[in-house]
Amino acid sequence: MRRLLVAALVLAAAALPQGAGAARYAVGARSVAALTPLRAALPGAESLAPIPALVVEADFPPRLAALPGATYVERLGSRRIAFEPSDPLAARQVYLTANHAFDFWETLPILPPVRVGVIDSGIDYGHPEFAGKIAATRSFVGGSARVDTRGHGTFVAGLIAAAIDNSQGIAGMAPSAELVIAKVVKNDDTIDVEAEARAIRWAVASGARVLNMSIGGVRDPADPGVDTYSPLEAAAIAFAVSRDVVVVAAVGNADASPREPWLYASYPAALPHVVGVSALARDGSAPLFSNRDRVYNDIAASGQGILSTFPRALTAPFRDCAEQGYSSCAPDDYRDAEGTSFAAPQVSAAAAVLFAVRPSLRAEQVTALLTRTATDAEPATGCRRCPPGRDELTGWGRLDVAAALRALSGPIPAVDRLEPNDDAGPRARKLWGKTIRVEASLDFWDDQNDVYAVKLRKGQSVYASVRGPAGTDTNLILWKPAATEVNDLRRRTLVARQSARPGPRDYLAHRAPKAGWYFVQVKLSSPGAGPYTLVVVKS
Image 1: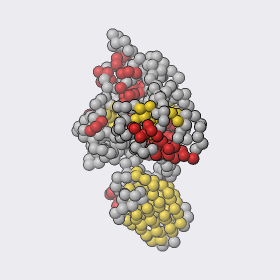
Image 2 (image 1 turned 90 degrees about the vertical axis):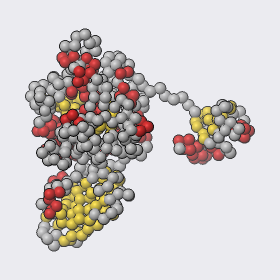
Image 3 (image 1 turned 135 degrees about the vertical axis):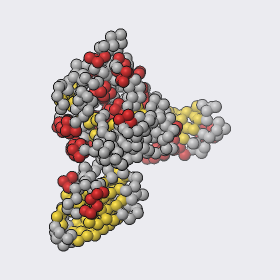
Image 4 (image 1 turned 45 degrees about the vertical axis):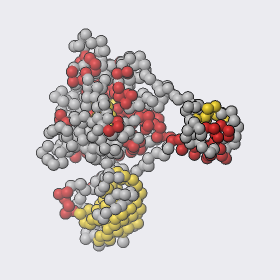
């Protein structure tokens, strides 16, 4: 396909002026014998036999691709050498290669700063890798956020923002990241939801465009006694999303779940618009510890054998270890670290890089660029249990930073400016007027529901129709004014009308028995994603 595209570009250039400067081209043939007529048509061409190709210098002649027997035309040139950081431990950061972290760059770029909130256990503030990289710190659990007694936060922060090409230690993945450090982890390794919510609010107010949350609570839809869903946490995440922030969270490790492997992503990864990140083993497989999830597992990154920064106070007891301040000198749990906690910051760093390169991007565009350019995890890449396409083990596949950056040169994913509008009550978007047309989008894995509030008088009729993404089941539900949660199946008595026909088109009509704000829910009930059109008419 690539060579056909090259040929097509040559043909399309027929109208361009000639003589702008000669270039060298390779002209391919099916066999060495087929080179003979090509050489006759291209005097001066050099044969590369026994490779079935010719090399010719020409002023961009459009007729090359149309020559009889030519199978492809390729403009020749030197391939770039990717930037390689000079940091001495970078060669042991195997995830940099796996993620193609620097392959897009010939030299380290100078990019505008992008703030990344790290909601974690604090940071070793004086660590040389973070000199000039920390924009703000605050603790929400007492003590100082500039002291990290657990090590987890410093480890996560290093993956994102450790100084690059400074000839010491490791290289972070986001060259221009500025850290906003919010300490929420207590000394017993627990996290208070109130502290988390306050930290999210503060980090967003401090200018964070990306939030990394390598923390989580167990999700178990089948057992409310185990499930740790928090409406406050969900509200805090929705607030961040409404402020155009990319929220990245680890899907969780099975050692904190009822059994291994665990089939559900942790919270907050299992919330709408959050990028849920799973882990990949060194061989490309999905390790048992990495939680599975059919819906909320969005993307994967390296999660074994991870090397990063570590608090110097916690590496000091290992005096015989030369790499002080790094996890290679840390306690055993971190020396050959694994976990989804350390996969997530790789994705957060990639999000920060996209924002730095294109500051005008919105959060949902960054999310789409990262997930849709991921390399599919499948048996050929080492994941024997991963079927082709999106799967519960790795989501859309392995993070590929270079591919996401290259995608910026093409069509950018569309923006849905009405988000977040995922539930009834105050989170629904109000629609005004008698005839309303809404153009928006849905994503089964990230944004299954859009909810709109429509004010009706007693006895007034409303008609709603939707044309959803092609190939999906898109449904319409009208909720009564008392509804507050469209996903609460216990409140189905609050449904006024429902239309769930197969396919992307649905419609419904209703006469209001009493006045109030009714809620129109557009729901994507089958895998898929794309734009939809909703029309609401009141009479």
